[in-house]
Amino acid sequence: MVVSFLCFFSQNTSAATYTGTLNHNTYVYDKSGKRKTSYKKLFKGEKVTLVGNLTSKTVTNPYTSMPYTRSQYDGLPVNAPFYFFVNDYGQPKKMCYVSYRMIKKQPYYNMGQGNYVKAANVGHIGKYAVYATELTLTVKRDAHLYNYAGNPISQMVKKGQKVRVDALLNLKNYNVSSRVYCFYRIKGTQTYIYANDTKRPRIDLQFAETIENRQKEQDRLHSKN
Image 1 (cartoon, helix red, strand yellow):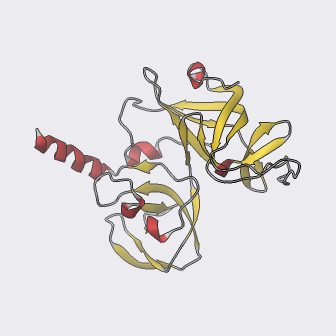
Image 2 (cartoon, one colour):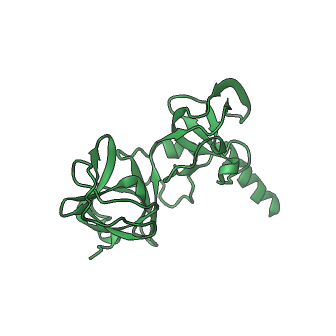
Image 3 (tube, one colour):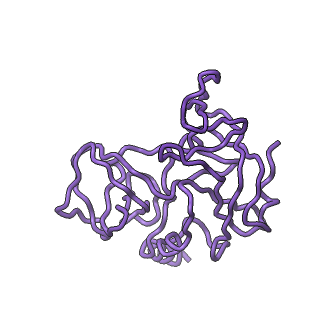
């Protein structure tokens, strides 16, 4: 049985079962990360049962339209590799994650009866899309990095290099969230890498507005009135 998320809004943590939807083909593993050959391969789009605790955090200014500005985004820390937003009608927005187990430095969800699935292969929990807190991306081609203004700088990255990122923003074109227009912020810096210069992750970061782009959008809407 899948328990509705609505019953958890008055609590921070609750144990139950949840339905996950796979975003990639995957296998079933044991608690040590060893593949369980007695189970068939699971395919993208299949539903899996996740067993664990749901931890939630009420979003500051919960009725602000999504996506969040950069400052709001940084102000919503989640102590988990993946999370999702519950935004049901008449309820405050919640930033949530289902408990997980770290196996060989990778997060796995418990499926019950000693079975585990890689968390990166679960793209939805219930009806809610899952986002990553941070990512390690692989660079597709030799490429320049960029500053906050969206201009290239002298620093470069090489094809095959790994970069750790913690934000996905559109530095120039209002609030268009397509990868064609977006940049990842390299963790611990104010330098950015163009999204299309990296391999697409299975689970992406949540798109976040820059304050400047939100103001541009407000100005554009105001000019129409």
